[in-house]
Each structure stands twice: as structure tokens, then as C-alpha cells.
Amino acid sequence: MTTRTLLVLGHPSPDGFNAALADAYADAALKAGRELRRINLHALNFDPILHGAYKGSQPLEPDLQVAQADILWAEEIVWVYPVWWGGLPALLKGFLDRVLLPGFAYKFRKGHRSWDKLLKGRTARIVVTLDTPGWYDRLVYGRPAWRQMKHTILQFCGMKLLSTTTFAPIATSKPEQRERWLAEVRRLAAV
Image (cartoon, rainbow, N blue to C red):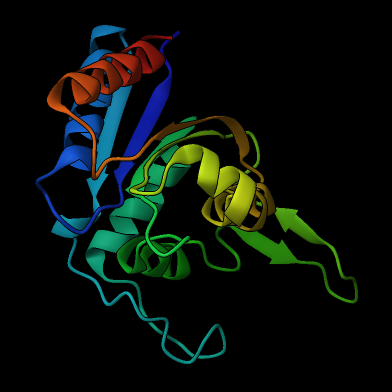
């Protein structure tokens, strides 16, 4: 049985190392026999601002309707994105705000503080890049972007995080280091 994998590239540019990581993951996943769909956030046509919070009516654009269908189709979701200012890029955050809606990703129970995790049963992998050294992000900053994605987004909606792979620092990396990182992400996708 093949795994249905959704790959989400959360970088606002189609070029660069995040796109290369996503390409490497996609190629290796397909060679490993997975079914693969891919969302490149930079190519979507949507308003990343959740106007009126969750109180108003803001219809989903067609690209976001397809994204929701892809999320429901997926057994595993792989998120590839950079960490900027200790957090998620604005485009990725806006995508999550618009797509992981009440009634789709979670549902609060009436009269309770608990909620139903509507995306339960799916797994996730995170592949991130940083310009900050990984040890510094972990020991000094406490990995805020990782904590946000794992605890307040993925787990909140019911997804189980299988792995986080961090490549850092990107700004000072040499081509041979980047080639090793691309090989590492290919190995990850082949599992």
C-alpha cells in the first residue's frame, strides 16, 4: 500500500534552497512509490489575511478549496519552509489561518473547553531552514517556530509529528554542504 503524501512548500519564492529541498523530497518520494501531491504556496491565488477573524464569512478561493481537498486526501503532510524572525513566513501563516478552519481542521465542543481534532490520523514531517545556527535556535530561542507548528497547529488539529529536519545556517553554507543536505532530505523521503 502506498502512502499518500502532500508536500507543502511554504516559501514565497519559487527559487532558492527551500524549493530545491522540496524538489529533492518530491523526486525521492515518487521513486519510493508514494502517491504525491504538491502545494507551492507562492503559486496560489488567495488572500492570506483572515479578515474578521473566525467570526465573519470569508469564502475560500478555489486554490484554497483544492488545498483543503488535498489535506483530506493526504495520509502524510510534509511542510518545507524557512524560519524567519523565529517564526513561520507570513505566506505560510496566512495559508494556515485560511485553510485550517473550524469545522474543517477542528471543532470546539459546545459547552466544553475541549475540541475535536478533525485531521486526526494524519502524520506530518517538517523540513526547515534557518540562517541562525540550529544549536542557537534550540538553546537560546527555544525553537519557537517548531513549538508553534508542532503544538499549536499540527497537534491541535490531530496530526502527529514524525520528524523535524533542520538545515542551518543557510546563509553561510557552502555548495558541498547543501548537496549533503539535499541527500539527507532524499533519504528522509525514501523511508
